[in-house]
Amino acid sequence: MKQHGYPPPRPRAEGAGVIAVERFERYESSEGFVAVPDADGEIFVFGGRPDTIVLTARVADALVTLTDRIGRGAHELVVLAGETVDTRISRERVIARERVAAGGSELFVVGKWAEPTSLR
Image 1 (cartoon, rainbow, N blue to C red):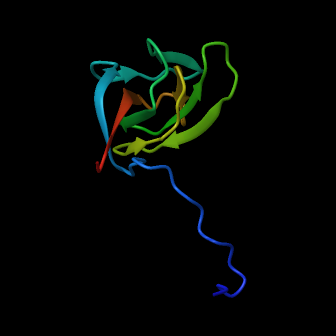
Image 2: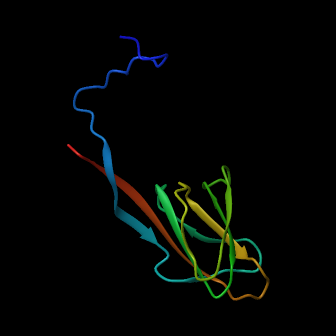
């Protein structure tokens, strides 16, 4: 019986499980809020490449750049004061500056390494 133009279903490997949950057993953090400078400054460097980076700003907004150790593959984002952002970006360096000079911004950085578990 033809399935009205749809291709036949693809075979799946035996024993292939579906990832149900991402667990983050290993993490590394700035161990507190770090003052954000007026000009771009390195806030934190991870001892590896985490699967996701969580950023929390307080007092004032921060402009954050996530990049690798030599500055390639930069992702820029704004973290608003009082906001926590789970970036789902994998980079090694966190560079930041205040969105408004003399704003007194502080940033808390956490890198998490995923350990997926399956349904089987």
